[in-house]
Length: 489
Image (cartoon, rainbow, N blue to C red; front, side):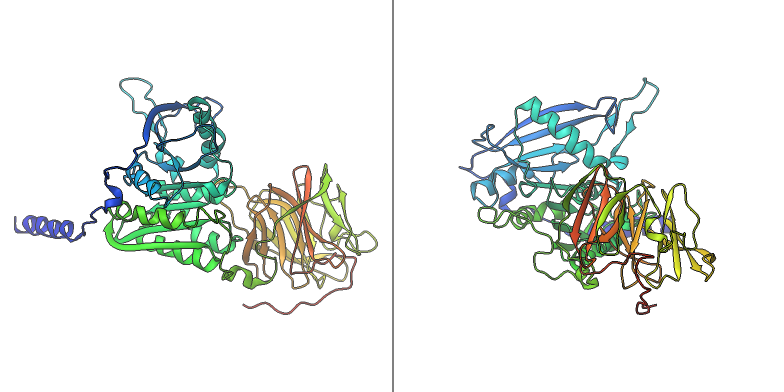
């Protein structure tokens, strides 16, 4: 009996320990402030959807005096209306602290039960907790066009005019939508975000560091009383995300407190978060990658961070090859860069679904099979045969399971560039993925070109793209061996 009473007392103390987070005036209805209107409706996904058969409620906030004929700035929220957002919108729009926003409040999908003795299928975790682009595809390509058509809206296509937010699993969902599609969303707020190991989100602090910085502005909130469960520690995970975003040079801010896994603290700070996300909206709406020039990502001094891929106007591209003078051409020969001057394969047999490449000193051959996340390494013998074959590079991959597309090349420092479903993964000599360069489309081959071999070319779909680099490439078998400096071990 005493133990039960003691447990109840401890529970009461624990519950009482969480601080209150009273709302400010900005989150409460104010007299003489024009009020927006709310629409409420339902969306049912068709069989061709990525979430077929799901039904979901949604609400739309239209600001006072809304002009449907003009492209509108907007903000999407997962889990429906949260953070007293419609009231905050009324107050901040009246103060001109934020633009006249359309608010879109979406609930997660549910597949209705098959009969009275069955349960519905609840899609929330599958949709929200995943780090795949599936939800962003649903949101951008299906849901937003559907509500625009149904309600006569015209949402801005400028990503600087779009924000996205959510709490808990809705928070990670909001971040991933912007992460995958910064061409549609650039302002993100996540409350007690679920950056833990449910559907792979525990990978994000590392991926944020390895990917070239994206043009996102991100605000994170969490507290010491946040969840600590089988899949991770929310409080620690949010801090790791903030540190990774800061390291990579993002426009990032945060609010830490002592609250638990709820929306209390996030609701209290929401008006100020909105001011920060939309600051300077009347004079400088653009959200830039690495705005302060403080990204540690550029410390690798390989690729010009902030550079952009340019369409090199080579259509119907299959596979790339490059001559000794740096001229890039099309080729169906997957091994063009791993032959010697007499056309012999250097330590590698032809691979039906893969590629080979040579180290700059021509002593090591890399073997890569399409669709795997491993690159093999073998030593090239004087006879041309290979020896000491082993798995050496472990490429980054997501829970989608896709990875290498096959193509590889090297630079003069001995770094290996691999075309993968995540982009161009760049590995050091010791076998580690140092960073990832996003690509306009999924690449299937990569090589260096240009007059001084300082342009990186990729073959994507039916086009080739290029961008300048700070590295210089090597044409295997067509240049004398180059001995790079040893790696840091």
